[in-house]
Image (cartoon, rainbow, N blue to C red):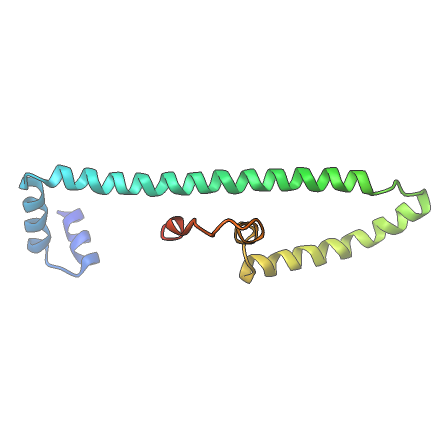
Length: 132
C-alpha cells in the first residue's frame, strides 16, 4: 500500500486509478507482449549507443596513436637549458589547453561530426541522434 500511495502521489492520480490500471494491465492478454516490445526497444537503443561508444573510443585511440607517432617523429630532443625553459612554460600551456578543451566540449562541434564532414560520409548516424 505504501508503494501504491507513493506511485499515485508521484503521478498525481488516485490510488484506485493506479490500482485499476495495474490490474487491467496484469489481466490483459497482451500485457506480456507489450512489456517484451518495450524491453526490446530499450535494448535496441542501448545496443546502438554501445556501438556508437565503441566507434568513438576506437577513433580516440587511433587519433592518440597517430598524434604520438607524429609528435615523436617530428619533435627534436631538447638540450638541458632549453628543456628547463620548456618545463617552466608547461603549466601555462597546459592550463590554456584545458580551457580550450572545456570550451569545445561545452559548445563546439564533436569530433565525430567533423570526421563525418571531412571524409564525406553523410552524418548518417541520425538514427542514433534520436537516442541521445
